[in-house]
Image (cartoon, rainbow over all chains, first blue to last red; front, side, top):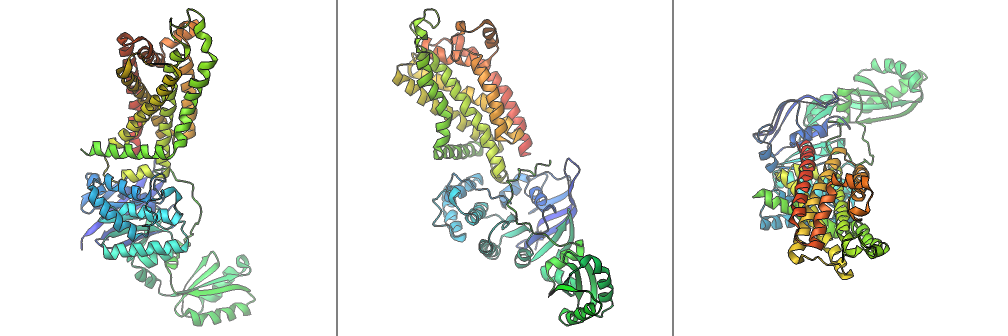
Amino acid sequence: MSDVISVKNLVEVYSDGTKAVDDISFNVREGEFFGFLGPNGAGKSTTIKILTTLLRKTSGAVEIAGFNLDSAASDIRKIIGVQSQETTVDGDLTGRENIELQGHFHQMKSENIKRRIDELLGLVGLEEAAEKRARNYSGGMKKRLDLATALIHKPKLLFLDEPTTGLDPQSRAAIWGYLQKLNKDEGITIFLTTQYLEEADKLCKRLSIIDSGKIVASGSPTELKREIGADSIRISLENCKKDTSRAKEIIKTMTDVTDIMESEECLTVYAKNAGLLIADIVRALDSSDIRLASVTFSSPSLDDVFMKHTGKRIRTEELVKAPSRMFGGRR
Amino acid sequence: MTLLSDTRYIFVRYMTKLIRTPILLFFSLFQPLLFLLLFTQLLGRLGNFPGILPPGVGYLEFATAGILMQNAFGSALQSGNSIVADIDSGFLQKMLVTPVSRPAILLGRLSSDAFRVVIQTAIILGLAYALGAYVTTGVIGILLIFFTLAFFGLAWSGISLALGMKTRSSETVFAIGGVITFPLLFLSPALFPISFLPDWVQTVSKFNPVSYAVDASRALMINGYDWATILPAWGVIGLVALITMSATLYQFRKVVS
């Protein structure tokens, strides 16, 4: 299978000297559902803006569907669909008119637009609201409409910048459904960014974890988790400050413990058979007069992968964002 | 030609938005209409004093050209806001990831501005007609007045568009726009005959592009095809347009590249 996206040594330095993207390389194969997982400010949106021809890269080589980003931007625009982080539908136009306008921007014939709109309205479940002005749509409906506008020209490659940020769980699940359908049924290659572990885990066949402009790990979710090779036990202590180092010493000596790290709840222990180990840990700490607040254990998650490579957890910020300025305002 | 068809789609989008938010039209027409209905009444007796207005011309007839100018100003200043709104909402970005013709984005906006000025001009002229002020040059003259004001409106849209793209703040566009507009209007023969104004204002008004545009539409309304007034006015407006459009183009290039 050929590469739809090929990125080599991509760097983006803003005019104030911030290195938003710091020498990343990756490729996405045709038909793949590929993701960038990382916290806010990791460089995900910047990368998407570069790949979608909106932002000029500082250095590096990028090819989209065989087209060179520097010399064939207009060819690239014909075959990509983009849903940006902000929901960008025109509230004064109806749902149908919003999609239609995008079709015209892609120089499609009117009868093709009409046929495709009906398909898309069905896909995102907006048939009934199609003639209403988008201003009156709910947040979830606007996102779905936005997705439909990005699909009007049957793009070969779809870029989604945090497509479900700020949505309620139900709308999120609905969007996930549409995306999986698009990838499977229409064979569209999807590049998605997200700060949600669950989203990356569920949707992406392959992903890169990105932090502070760097790719820290890549692979399928299963591969990445297998790399951790252990369950994680999260321990929080009543007096974390005082007891951490002592607790660490005690736990370190136990068999099956592969790694132990300080984390936001206090300690995270990686071990082969976490279920069996918990009782030992509780007993050992108790006999050393270290009081526990809580202990939880889980199979490896992408959060553990992130933790392992960056030393911190992905903080998902559920904030209502002020409308962000077009190009990040930092250029 | 994708440039023409894209321009048309963008023009239609802006017109649809305008029609669906009639409150915007109302607000930009409110001030000119207030002047047309009330201000001309207040100063209606100016015509009774000999030597102030041209003989046989009432104040309403005289002031209509100035009010048309005021109207062109008002809608031109809203142009910058529309581009700020498209930048803020991300809609401009959404257009830019499609193969849509880049110049069409600007041309669609400008043509909708010009069209809007023409519609509002027609409304004001219609109302002035009902109140008893006629365009002596008839239909052709009215078309030339449309052209003059649309052309002037475009030149002025250039200021608000450039400001909008530079500052990305509609408040700034309005503030700076207001600061530029009103002095220019008052330092011109828009609402008062030039001989009525103090000497220093008469001097300033000679350098005020608004004076030329007002004189041209006034000539078409009252005197007839006074080409010695009309052609220089178009020249002056063209010069202003050249400057403001260069600024707009410069800012636009920065935004789209």
